[in-house]
Length: 598
Image 1 (spheres, rainbow, N blue to C red):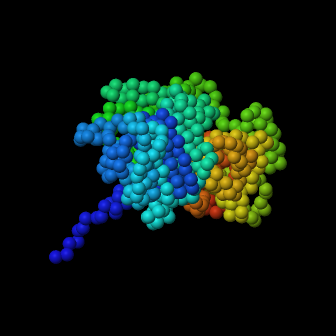
Image 2 (tube, rainbow, N blue to C red):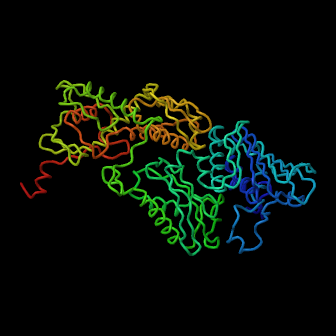
Image 3 (tube, rainbow, N blue to C red):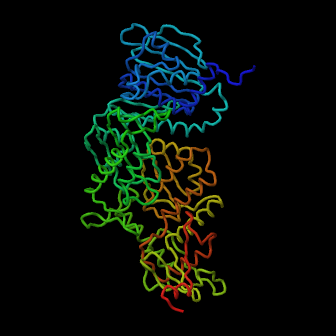
């Protein structure tokens, strides 16, 4: 009788195992760096060619391995960390040295060189596709060097899913950044195609390492957090003011016992701590470390160990929420009131928005002068020029009566709570959300300009120098042409700094730095070689959000008229780009029934 079930050959098992651990070059870097840290390395150098597809080399000065261990670490299920079931559920290391190496070797050409302090010579082993081809003695310093060449050379179906070099090196830099944040006492360096990208020297404080990796300007907006919760719980790190939020979770770095994690319980607790402090769709800047008894957390629920399972999830969740809210409360922030205004605890004005350049006051005066000129020419029919409530310049060109569309033909009654425009259409009452309406106008204008070849830009009087993290910087470098079409004029300024020399004309430059960071975060999150239509829409919506009329802003009668005229000139004017309704209609019959009339 023919058997349907068969035992897979060893080489195929290794390739399947590799698929669980090795997703891309960044996965290789993560596993090798964790091994180096577990080996007690004080200096680690990562050298990458071709985004890691051609070469990943990790050199460390850790304890190294002798001949027997060097061979054993390439065998499946070999580890120096686990001896019993109890060890598996009380891990104090980042990995089990050796369990990832056979998976990496199975899909690459791997060379391992290692020497322990007890040996006068080291050992070199070369494996190809998981099979050892040669081995011998070699003269090297104490430590380990692992070279991984031609990743996925024997699995072309998997190799074709790798992205451009810029995208892959961005993921690698992100991995190095995470581990470097968790280990400021270790020196990290990253080199790509011979060009240094990261050079993080040994630091004594977390803040110094954060400044070196994420930019020193950020340090002024971070609040130190130190909280002992008892029962083996301790939380420490840095949390950002709500004013330095991001459009993605890319700036949320959370660690458990020194291991970077993306756990849903921890993420939810953080966002709960910031509840009512952030605008919808915004995420904080956080570098937090949770110390917990290893016996109370299981880190083996996911092959990459990014997710964990707590024995008492509620205890951990509530501890983080209370700690974050307690540290933010004295910092001067109250919940965001309806309308989006932020008010400080002491009753002082809200923090000023991010400004462009190093001299905000002169820039503000110049910008106000330019805006005053634009207001005078655009609203000559108004009694006196006044500041427009949004960066968009609402057109006020008159329309002939016969050209009036639906919105411009409405009879304007006024504003409700400085957020909704009240109009009359015959016997019906029309309520228009000015925020949603202006967002649709801006989005359609941006989309129209982009489809015509390029969003119209304007040069800044003083370029803004923006420091990004490594993943965001790599994303910008890989999409400069796309960003130029969106109206951004960006030039490298050394390291991960960029000079912003121009922004889309339809937008204000007052929040240019935040906008560039958000666009960089969106592009980095795409992980694609081009801006596909859906991704482009997301970025244009993001840009429109930065330049729209806000709720809780007064509008003069000419400005309402201009808003209604512009609504008639765009498609899909009944909904904002997020799908929310722009207007609601209440008939006379509905209103009379409300008051028990008729």
